[in-house]
Length: 229
Image (cartoon, rainbow, N blue to C red; front, side):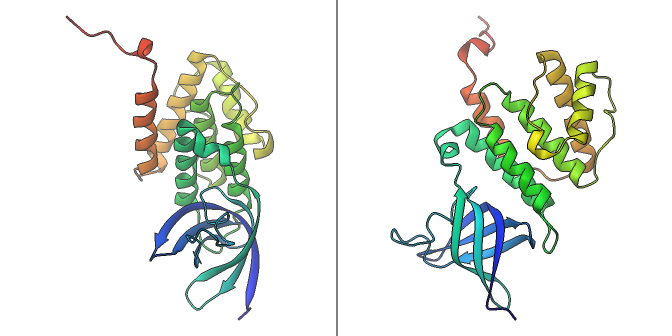
């Protein structure tokens, strides 16, 4: 058994363990989805504190145990710090991470899924892009990577939405989040993705519920229906 191994990946979730430790869920290129214990990561002076946070992306040196990995050190190249300062973006990002967790598997190459999550998180910072559309593009591409998708929508959509669908299926993650749709086409695209998701995915995502509740709270008062007398 090797004493240590270095992997490239991103933190999908964290959980406090005991008084000072954390359990991390990592999506890695080399080993897919794995659990890692970060000993002492909750201590203020811990060298692991910056690596044991949601969305930390980089390389992680792990010690291999009999049943689990332990984090020895990390070189984090992207923290996505700004996400934690934007409640809406944090909710979207948490949903993307849970979606990635759903499809993640141990001992399967996680490279493409990591690229998708990384690019989706970056797209959230672009104020020229619709976040609801980013979500639907992310869902469609994630399902396509898993082989659970339709070549074309099963419901009628505008031609621009049809072109967008094909673009998502045919385009690598690095160039995925580069288009917009008008309101009608975006809604039709979203409905088509949702219908496909309902057919392939049975899980109820807790983070999606939080996202929808947060969006309802952040909705401008002008968009709310007028009270009846």
